[in-house]
Image 1: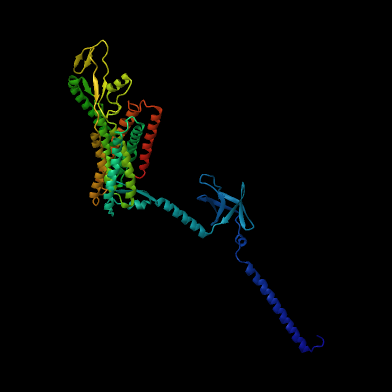
Image 2 (image 1 turned 90 degrees about the vertical axis):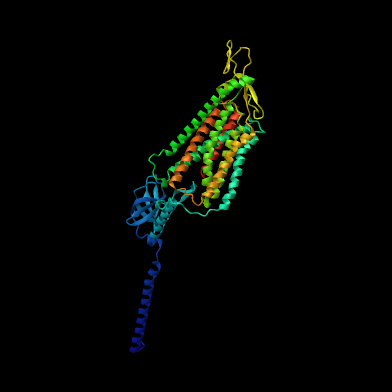
Length: 513
């Protein structure tokens, strides 16, 4: 530097000064740009503002959410609607990249809920609530689609006018014959089987008790429930008497009682008129017990036929979307009901008389039963002897003490007569289906007159089957001198099991029809 000229020294100083300035500027730029790179959002930066406490805690499903001002935090703990929820969490602090608040049992982690996820969660909850309330379950009764669930505004749009639908006529005509075959199989099988199997066979007992359960379940689960649905229809309006269905069913029970009571009285009057003549001719009198059983069967069949024709009509007017499902259920319904009726018809003239006191007394006096195979031949049994040391009294006068006791004749019921009784049930449902097909384009199940007619017939049929099922079948068989009154343990167990099975199977079918 000493050997340089002054001008050269000046140039070197300027160069050094310039380099120093450039170096300072570069260092400044590097120092300035470094924070820009590290200032990218991180969890630590996001947690720069840590709330000291969160409050306003509430539940979404089983998740706990609390607020710090307007910011919502999710508390990583579980709770239920019945558990006590803390009003607030205090002592909030950060550990590394997480936030924690203090609780009596220790620290609990919290996290910030982004507005977007919060809105999505709320919308998801609303969608779930909407879907749960708007889910509808529909089924057909009397050609009307009855739905449960759904939004209220959907119910407001319901109409009582006739709904036009596309019906598969050929399918309905074809299935009419399938229904005829199924009903015939159900009602004729027990009758034909009774010609080859003794009426005392345990299998026949199982069929009879299963049929008893079917009849009782049909009355309560199917008919009475359907009648209540009819009278609760919005198209009918609000009834001034809410017990309409129950009152009509009670009337059906009373009608059944009157029919059987007067039928038995007429039979007794007829027997009293003809008994003297029969005794004069052959010393025998005709047992009227099977005639009383015939009255019982006629009452049962009336109740079954009333609702079977309604089943046929309302089946075919159901929409195609539900028709095949309903048909499958009705097929089993009719088959089981046919077994119930057929097993009772098959027993005509074979079971001990349960409505003739003198006949029952005669059985207990002699200590054995003579009803064995009465379907094949006439059975004669002695009547109770007269009191000793007194003349033997008859309806025809007084006979001597040493005269033989009277003999009661049980006349069998012919197979032809039994099949004729059963044929009414086999035909009535297909006839109802044929009527339904004929009125398919005019039928309106929402018409008030139609609702009243169907509801009334369903309720009356329910009352009839209640009487027949509980009084004539269940009570008579098990408590009033029927076949189960003195049955052995195995037969009793088999009867109870089949009775419960009949109740359960028909109750299950009531879910769909």
